[in-house]
Length: 364
Ligand SMILES: [Zn+2]
Image (cartoon, rainbow, N blue to C red; front, side):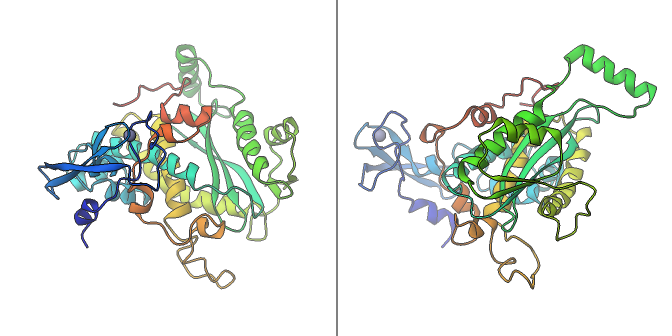
């Protein structure tokens, strides 16, 4: 069956009207068919529906990833190319669309994927977790940052990936010092305690589902402060950073993941010449990478003799929130609305692309 005929058969999963009683879905047939509309692109027609309760009209397209998009079936390719290290610019050239279209699709998918994740997230930790930061930068070396990452020791499930801007420190040439000072004069310093604050957020969330499990970190002071600030019911084990990070080191899962990121971020850096990079774009890609790795791909590409399912099972399968590798359709096929889920402040800021400390103008 082709994708377009699939779409024609789609049964409306909920009423798009946020004030309707059927907005959160129902088992009953809450709609009536309400004719067809012609479309310019395949499948050339679109089933229309009307909600029996509130009268809202909608169509099959309302729920698809290409809803209100000029070019159909583009998002899936954008996702795969982007998650495999291609820059937005190269994807745009390959698919013969504007770079803004690529950015727009990535933004939409990342926001959509957050809603998917909220509904398909482990309710209880069934394993220990390693937590550490990966240092990279947005826009330029004067804006270093940390990607605070929590990974399952066994599953490699990425529980959290949050962002902390850092102030540039350490050795600089005179010229760099002057540049750094002028940026600070113009924009102010980045928040000084972001690693601590992000760690409180991540560890608090882990703590709420992980009583009795172990959290592994290095001896970073911010992590210890974060643990002390919480009513922490996990065991916290600090690993000396001098200890070699081979596969017996509890922080090894972090390193493994960061090796993958490095490939991804090196492609990010090449983009700095072609577009104004913004924290929002970076975070959106990190969010997508989390979904892509957790739900849509096996834990490891290659067979592993100690872990016979590693090349077949996604991290989500290990932690019991998926029964198979999920397809693009599984994750993005049914468009959901923000009004259908409960969000915390950080998640809301993500969807609003709110980055008060950013030094960059967001590209429209
Ligand atoms: Zn309705």
